[in-house]
Image (cartoon, rainbow, N blue to C red; front, top):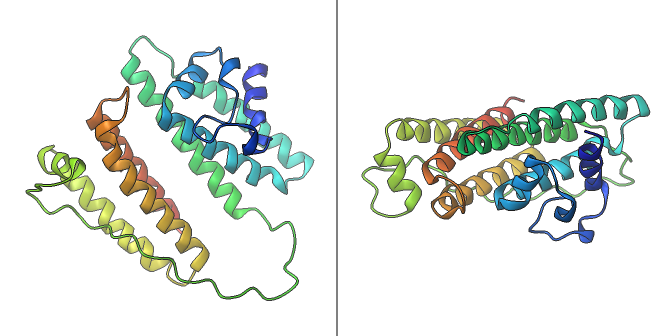
Length: 228
């Protein structure tokens, strides 16, 4: 557990010290099952980098007491992550993705709520309105796009797609008066659109499982983003 925490703390090092396509830690030191999975799967490596970035942001202005609490929570989460290992590889990897996405959301929420480390010396210029991501429910029957065709052909996915599009529009309306939050939300949607289609060619993953997990996780992130 100590070694696992040390690997996570490596995330505090600058990203320039590691390859941008890999995880936040050195895969040459990966020994545990979860670490090897993160090194082997590009989407898990990306999740690990997101967690590392959110960890740095969440702990940047923390007091010693707050940092101790965050480290305790991180140790508990590492135990949960490692507990995903099991005889069924598909279920184990799904568990790993689920707990990593949840941790990413939790840390990003903490980071966004953290107090600023310094006050601006001048009034900042108004932020430009972010470009809205074109996200609408798939029109069935779909004849183009791997994700769209799967959504139309798979029971339950069309309803999930409708829910994602509807809740995204509602969240966007709630965030309209907060340019910074809206910009983060549009980035989330942009990442979702790209990840959804990438599931059709995700190495080492069951494409439909990838698509459903991506849609469900994004729906959870949309709800969290628009909660305020």
